[in-house]
Amino acid sequence: MLITRNKKILLHVCCAPCATACVERLLADERDVSLYYSNSNMNSKEEFEKRLSYVEKVAGIFDVDLEIDTYQHDEWLEHVRGLENEAEKGLRCTKCFGWSLERTALKAVEVGIESFATSLTVSPHKNSGVIFEAGNQYDSFEALDFKKQNGFLRSRELSEKFDLYRQSFCGCEFSMR
Image (cartoon, rainbow, N blue to C red; front, side, top):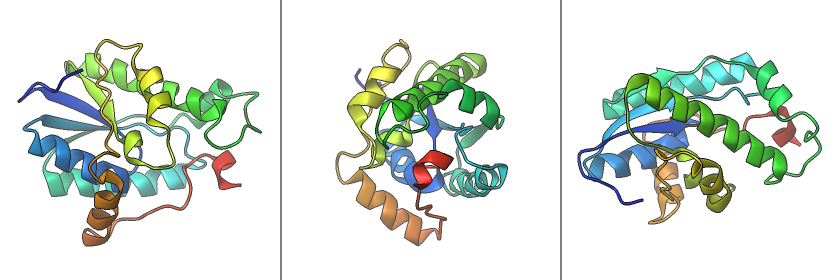
């Protein structure tokens, strides 16, 4: 899908570091950005809250709106049940992407934003093609690969500049192995 100038977009954000370069790029493309922090995959409420505090910092730095999803880890665990032993980047991750993107699609409708994307694609640890497959079932999804144009490197630079928490694992208890 092509980017339409001055169009509002809801950006699903997994964490502050990943959000930085994505928000910067969208704003440079003259997009009207709102963030959506939806991370029920976090292994604990404490990790969810810690990452949220830094996402709030990013929203303030870039002066963008932030919507916050409720933490529903038990429901997320049920969603990925049976896939606990899958390797990282396996079917569990695919299901997790689907969970987050569905929630983002629903939030976009709820708040009246006609398109959405995700910061997940900035990470070299995530397969953008798999993320796009999960998102493309929604007409409002924009398949933006934020890894391009050194997006991950830029996210690291901005994370250092803004003194953001850079976690060492994706978030779920299974990714800590």
